[in-house]
Length: 113
Image 1 (cartoon, rainbow, N blue to C red):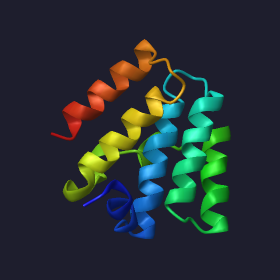
Image 2: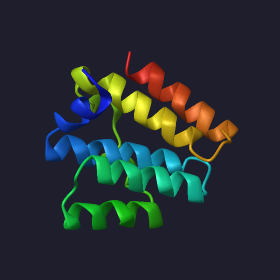
Image 3: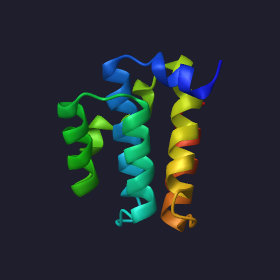
Image 4: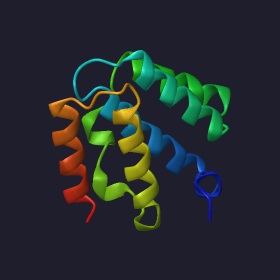
């Protein structure tokens, strides 16, 4: 199954959960770069979010999602690889992986095993 097919299988709740994780990682070094923002916008497009959902994601690019809404244990097991790949792509989107991003991603890997 292709990545786009996997993305298409996510229900609306899972799509927003994925974007909460992705945007929270954009904030892990306290700066959302143009490359990270562009990656999120591409992901929003590929997920075919509704306009209200896209507005919600745009808000997370302006201010990070609440920490209690980004719980790795809520990632459905069957979608973990998809979430991990999307987060990894996000932190690599600007061509630099900060120590904070690296550390936070490492923690996510540990928590989703």
